[in-house]
Amino acid sequence: MNIAFFLLPKQEVACVTLDSTLRQTLERMEFHRYTAVPILGPGGEYAGTVTEGDLLWYMKESGGKVTFENSSKFLLRDVPLRMSNKPVSIEADMEDLINLAKVQNFVPVVDDMNRFIGIVRRSQIIEYCEKFVSRQSMESI
Image (cartoon, rainbow, N blue to C red; front, side, top):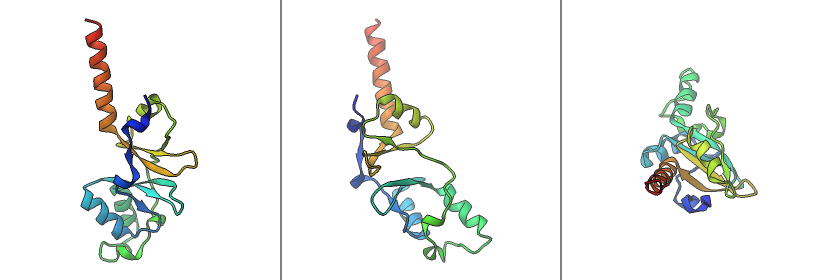
């Protein structure tokens, strides 16, 4: 099955850029109630995924230099990302998608130039697998 069927397009995904401030990132995550969001580079390419943990560790390891009050002075590009959420190509197959979804809440999808085009949520993949297993069970009866 074509993974484009599961794609939540970029326009509907809460993203941040490398030039976003920590405050903008935190507020976007809070507003949407997400624990992780994709990061886009200047050309719209997928640059990684930032998590709440990345931001908290960055603030903690700053020795008090970075606080919520002054978080608008610090850029996301300076925050080390602790997890590497790998993207898949829009041409990928379901097996690739399932393998990544085992360890990621969502799978970023990129075009052939690594430009971010959207995400596939793990919940959608689980629903697909559930329907597939149900169909197989019905056929074996």
